[in-house]
Every structure is written in C-alpha cells, then in structure tokens.
Image 1 (tube, rainbow over the protein chains, first blue to last red):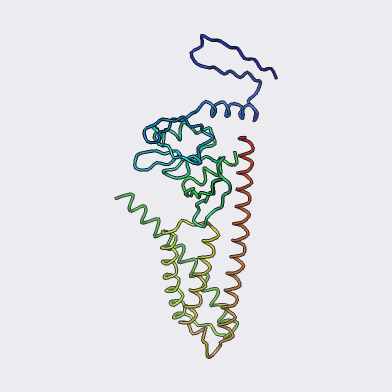
Image 2: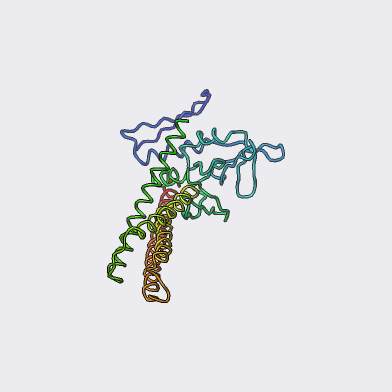
Length: 145
Length: 147
C-alpha cells in the first residue's frame, strides 16, 4: 500500500482521496475513522461555546425541543435537532435508541434484553439507558454489521 | 371507518382463533382425563362449560397481548399459565377435580402443570441468557472493529 500526502497551502478544504481496487473492511474502517474524526460538535454550557469530540460523547438527549450532549463530566446544549444528528452520525458508532436519545455504542459496557422486547444498556460510567422496542431491532442489526 | 372495520375484523379473527385453540386443547385434556380416569364420556353440558372457559381465557389472553408487546418465551409462559388456570377452573365446574372425591387427580394435575411451568421457565431463562451473551459478544466485536 502506498501513502501519499500532498501539502497544498492554497486549498480551501482538506481533501482525502482513497484509491483502491475494492472497498474492503479495512477501507471501511479508514473511511469511518476519517468521517468521525472530522465531525466535531459545538456545545454550550452557560452560554459559553465548547468544541466536543464525538468520542467523548456518551449520548444525545432531546428535552423539550432542546438537545443535550452528555459527556463524562459535563452536559452541553447543542444547536442541532435530534433528527439532524441521527442523519449526520448515521455511519458512526452513534445510533438512535429511543425517540429522544442517540447513543454512542462505544460507551456501552454491557447490554441485556428485557422481557418486553426492550434492551437495557449499562454505560461505562454506570448510567443505565433503555433501548426501546422500536429501535431494538436496528440496534441489534448495527451490532451485527 | 374502513380502517376501524378492518382492525375490528382482525381482532375478531384473532379472538376466534385463540378461543378455538383453547377449546380444542381443553377438550382434548378433559376428554382424556374423563376417558381414562372416570371411564365416562359426558357431552353437551361439558362442552358448553369448556367453550365458556375457552372464551373467557381468550379474552384474558387477547387483553394481555394488547397491553404488552412481550417476547415469545414470556408469551409462552403466560399462555401456559392461563391455559393451566382454564383447565383447573373448567375442571372444577365439570366436577373432574374434586378435593374430597379425587384429591390425587387434582394434586397430580397441579403437579404436572407446575412442572411444565418450571420447564418452560428454565427454557426461557437459558434462552434469555444465551441471547444476552450473543448480544454482548456482538457489542464487543463492534467496539473492537470501531477502535
């Protein structure tokens, strides 16, 4: 494999071009990594704006038309709608798990199925999040991809 | 209006199918007991009691499934428990289970029904554990892939 990097100072936006014979698992991994690395979310605490890296976010939650990003210590208010985030993060480790929640799968410690078809997810910070019946099938499908 | 009629039709069909299944099961169970234990074949009144028990059981089951969208194995346990109840209550009204006349039959039936419930519950617990293990294995693989 050859790796070629051209540094062009006049370029408006960074371009990444991958040339391959066939898109395999490694290429998918690289493209997913590039996609997620370039997605940053701006969140606010008490009116002050902060840049949040995707890998630091545990989950997004919509509460009364406002969307919050929950990290290990802080909760940020973000300027996106939940549906916009769901579309934007479709190819990342985030998945909608309830009508008001988008969860980062990488932050799940363990999961267990409940009798009513829902799934209980324990996050690495010990918090418990419920994956509702409507989204449980999609969640299982994403894990098995 | 059309949608309501279609929905109503669907519920009536579900109800009839469930009642028919319960009726068939109860008839087979009671028929066998009456045949082998009492060496007696009674007919019309018994069939009507079984049919009434089946209808009541079907209403309970339908109501339960309308309220809770639950997993298949829990459904099986609930169906089994309600069926057992229908058998015992139906048997009481059919004078098959009488504590004074034939206590052994009553206790053995309760024993077998309880054993069946235990077996289904064990299967449910094992399947639930397997499903959890498989889900956690998938989660682990996903996290490794994404790292």
